Image 1 (tube, rainbow, N blue to C red):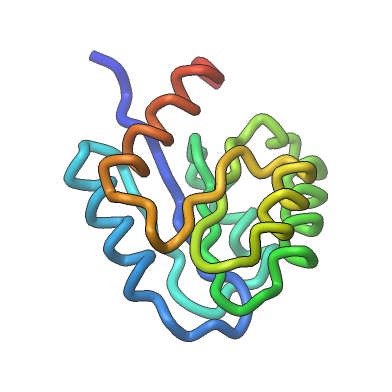
Image 2 (spheres, rainbow, N blue to C red):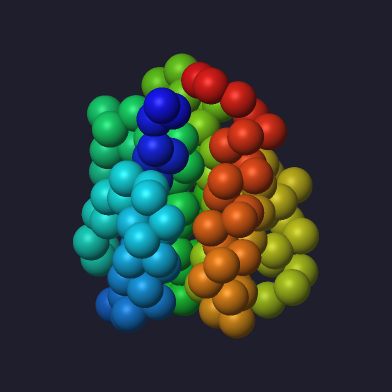
Amino acid sequence: MTQPIRVLLAKVGLDGHDRGVKVVARTLRDAGMDVIYSGLHRTPEEVVTAAVQEDVDVLGVSLLSGVQLTVFPKIFQLLAQKGADDMIVIAGGVMPDEDVIEIKKMGVREVLLQDTPPEAIVQTLTRLVSERGVR
């Protein structure tokens, strides 16, 4: 039997709305994944530390506050410092198309916006982990 995909979902910054990320967490759990939700108002340091400690396959960062262009460089820097730069990082929430392009250049593997169907989120994470292989 293979291990379930482990996912940490995080809300970074001052954004206080987490209904969407909670729906995603439930969807992923229902699909058999191990899901940890960090809660609101986390710093990049807290999120990366938790992701490394929990040995997750996927770090999903949900943003509605427009800080994606400053948050993701910090997250990737911290992952590299901790030797976890093979961790799959995805983004979710609401952001302009031009920011989606920029954060993908930084290393975000996929951006799942507010209109992404739940089954597409499950399929995307499953595909990314399968493509990367065992850590």
